[in-house]
Image: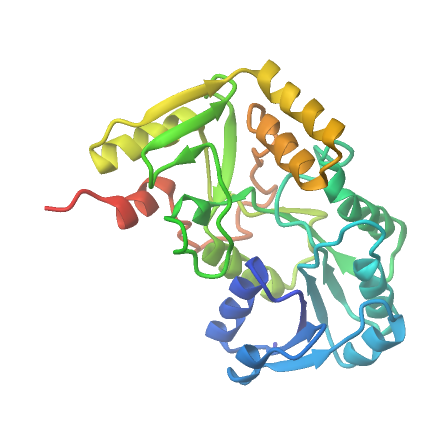
Length: 300
């Protein structure tokens, strides 16, 4: 059955999801944008300009919409996503996916960086309402971060503990902590399946591409490239000191990245499997060693 889907925030991972729906070609796609988006318009995607500070503006844009998928990132007292949920509910939108796209919010509901407070606030609002079906989607880190600088399809370059391009690793902790990574295009395929699935959504949806330790990732990089990686271990005391220094300096972004760096030395980024193993049946999730081989494999 064809549905009308509204995408809020079609940059980064949001653009990967737009690509997945365009490739499928089954549903009507609408992108909500603060301004014009000629690139999407040129692809025959309907772009509706909205004012996220105005519920009435969002309500007008959501007329006839069945599903809202949010990729909004908020800072400070921004309530864009809360307004989006209010407008979606008022318009009878059937399903809503909030802006999560990362950690397991079931396990880390109250244990996430302060910059993610907007996600926690919306989760609490969703739990208290019964008008709209929702699911909280977690996919771990984007596996695309393993690609060379400047080569990502839509995502920005973000440093992670293992830098395959430079054949080095700066590993927080002892290297045996596990993390989940999922390739962004595979996330798009999974979201399309999720939208098409008529069964009631689970409260938590896990898109788990691959789960491994940092040591395993270094091993795969060395096997594929034939090069020995330079590996540095960062003790937890040094990680905690960086957080303290960042807080003392009062730089929100430095606090955020110092916090994330410390969490790499834990299971913060490890995701479980879905209770229903058939949810994403048929998707051949990209594996990190295969991705490394595609981009860095030894040349004959």
